[in-house]
Length: 358
Image 1 (tube, one colour):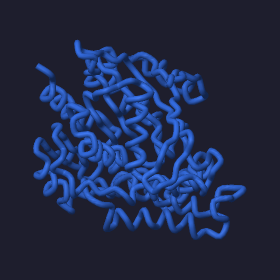
Image 2 (image 1 turned 90 degrees about the vertical axis):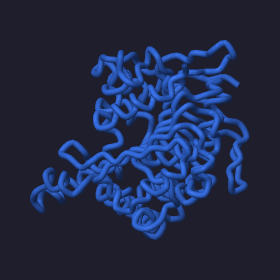
Image 3 (image 1 turned 30 degrees about the horizontal axis):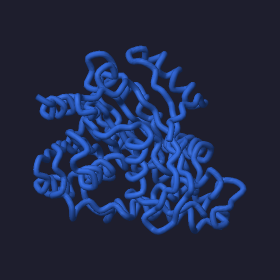
Image 4 (image 1 turned 180 degrees about the vertical axis):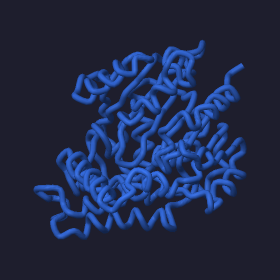
């Protein structure tokens, strides 16, 4: 099987972003088709398409093992494009920076159900197989090993959903990587308030009268509910008050955000993406993680609040685990702090140095 590089509208947008940033080479966009993909619930697709970006080139040792590949995984409803934003890419990819693309081979997929990879809105709608995080990791693994011929990872890192995937990577493929860095996530089953806000999104879409079992001619009203919940959970209250200090400004800002979501996201895609977290439960197998793991959360994250003390408790079960909570400040932005690399890149530098091959 061969990897096919394609030029798409997203790729052109990527190039434009890179030109503006001007501190690292342009990424390469590609697509790989996985044949005969079997989902954990017994369903299958003859083809699953995985879109991805790469920066840098793979380097192999004398045994043919790739030693410089870094897998970067995005959050729910996101895509590879989010890791080209200046607050992430400009802090990490340039010469001498932590993920200097002249040294590292960065692989950034659009995960199953997201971006330009196979997803419900491509045509199957609610007939698309119900995927979970296990299926998403399997698709990532096959993209790496079959599509890109990558047999080892220097680092697995991810934000939010990608952070949860990072915990699972350490359990499912414990010898495949040198290090793990999950951001904005917890190593426990989705429960409590985290489950409730996700259920609001799922129920809001499924129960909207214009959803029509996923065969809606225009985006159903339930997608508005999803957009409002995404806005509500995505930042911290102090920042929201600074941004929208009056009732009028609050309503106008929320309306703009909802309009953006209604135009740019699809209800079936959102429904599937949030339902996928239902199989997430790394808790029972944390002792299987062998690679050094550095988990980073922020104190103002409404989705993973430090008051739960889950990270502090569970990291003790990871043999080479460490956890850091970034204190609240005028620089943190709630859950979205995971993409603001200036807040945590010094810890990434330390992790890479600590796990360097001698």
